[in-house]
Length: 231
Image 1 (tube, helix red, strand yellow):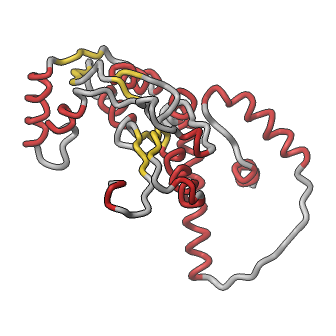
Image 2 (cartoon, rainbow, N blue to C red):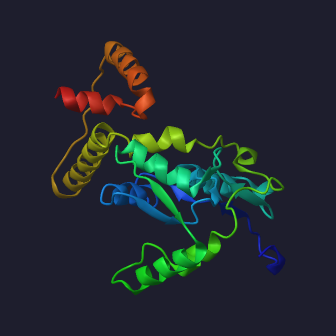
Image 3 (spheres, one colour):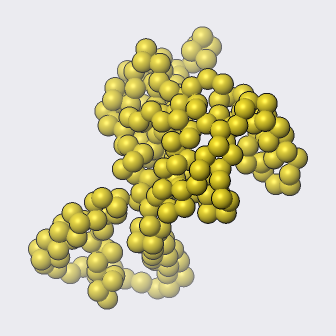
C-alpha cells in the first residue's frame, strides 16, 4: 500500500475485543450453551487489543503528520492462545467449559458445516486458514506506545463487560437509556437551559471509595450514576 504513493498510515491490529464484540461475547455465550468447547486453532497465539485503543490510535495518527508512511502494530500487552482466550471468557461469566483442540482437517470440516448453515457463519474456512500463523506483533515495527498509547490488558477490560454481567451491564444500559431519552426530549419537547452551583465534595469522596472497592471487577462509577440513583 505504501508503494501507491498516497499519504498512508497503516495500523495492523491483532484480534480486536470490546463491549459489543463478536469475539469474547461469542465464546462466553457458547460456553453457556454447551458442555465443552471443540476449538480449531486452539494453540494459535493472539495479542488481543481493546477497540478503544485502536480507535485512539486512529485519532492520534490523524493528528500526527509524522505518522504518514509508517506502519504500526496495534496490539495489546498480553499474548494468549485462542484456548486461553476462550477459557478467560468462560471464567469471567462463570461458565468455563473444557476446551478440546481440533485437528486442522476436522476444524475445516466444522467451518464448512458452519458456512452451510443459515445466517452469518460463526467460523469460516478462511478463519481456519488464517490461524495457521500466530497473530502477534513481529517486534520489528512501532507499536501503540509510539502513538502515545499504553494499551489496556484484556484481563483488566474484559471483566467490565463479561464479568458478573450484572453491575457493569446495568450501568451501561442505564446510561444508554438516559442518553436516548435526553436526545429525544431535546428534539421533541420545548426546553430551556438552567445552571446551578452544586457542592459535590462528599459525593466525589464517596465515589472514589466505591471505585476502589470495585476496581477488581472492572467497574467504574461516574458522578451521573450516583446522582441518578439518588434521584
